[in-house]
Image 1 (tube, one colour):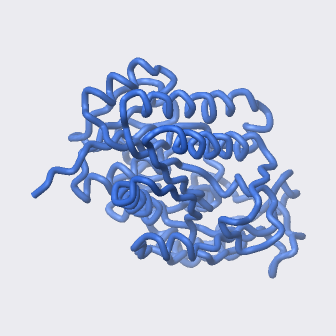
Image 2 (cartoon, rainbow, N blue to C red; image 1 turned 90 degrees about the vertical axis):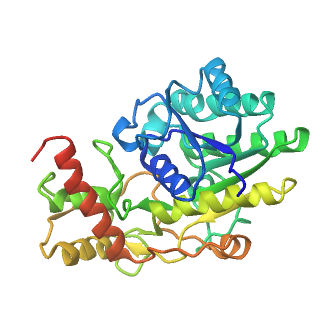
Length: 335
């Protein structure tokens, strides 16, 4: 039996990164996490996974880690992700997402790491004129968050032409849910994700859920989004890793979604259904830059990878998020 090479996961103590760590470990990959724990949590990392507590801006520590563990691929999740904050503080996003990614890519090249998987976003498409959105749609970000991620995609493409490294940029739609065994989940305080907010309200941690805009050009007037279970997204990363290793000359830029949208009201109705208890909705004004609908065309990833989503069901996503929210109460001693 051949031993699998070691993988470094940046931001592996965060929401999506921690699920990627679990999926890698479940599939037998050795993993090393590098995370400064500014938004991640030590409890999200399994005990048998080494944690290097450092910022990825610290290139000396990054390169020492890459060499010490003979890392053969990087999964890069570390970064800042709040769109309104990126508008208020663009320099933070260009530092944390673009400048730090540039340094990480440079370290990968210096240390001879041949494969790089990047956590990108549907925000690189901006306000697309068509729905569903395919990978060929123009990338025209409307906020610094989307632009900071697009700049990293461009860097990866250029570097892959100049050096022996290939990459996969996975453009996420709306990530939700939690590990089915409740080993990890969305733990960030004050998160803005709709399903996270809704399950907090269902458990009495919030008084209500704000509905931002009811006058969109959608069936019920509220925004429509493509929700993908975080564990299915993590599985896509492991398949991307295998694809990069199988074809070292090939790069991938792929949407990660289910190709099916749900409106804000449909999500809230589903939470009511799963919890058997209605949550209060408060109608508020639209938020700047919110597109009416963001739904993926996911045919490309389905054709390229043997990706078979296990949790493509809204009620299942909500049930897993709810179970994790209850466990988080125990972890934090809030109950």
